[in-house]
Length: 161
Image 1 (cartoon, rainbow, N blue to C red):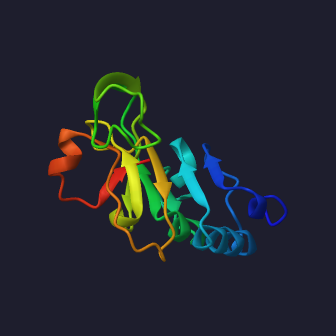
Image 2: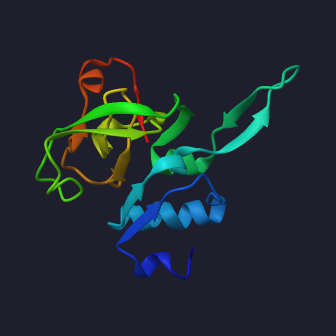
């Protein structure tokens, strides 16, 4: 990561892993603070799953990477149809899309550390489809580029990934 990230303006991640180790996470955080942008899709907020004692169930382990990302995978419901409503149709990630559309996808629910530091696309289920991360040093407040009725009324800090 140290070799190629400094020359990039946008990092796009999609799958759950491999995740940045401590050194890679430091490089990633510094890059974001210097103005890099991160589009974290799908399983990017996932992590290492460990088996719970006395059960066959697993739970995700939060890592320093998740603090840098600003979110952590909680779970996802089954693939289903849902409506997406754009909150900002002129945002570069959503420009050219219809203001509202129906799609079939696997919504992801994630805990978001700082909603004010993220722009997100949220399907009606309250799950986030896409997200861009601004560094903590950025002073301007941002708003979601798309949001659903459920996400607008939700009081929970969870969103989708």
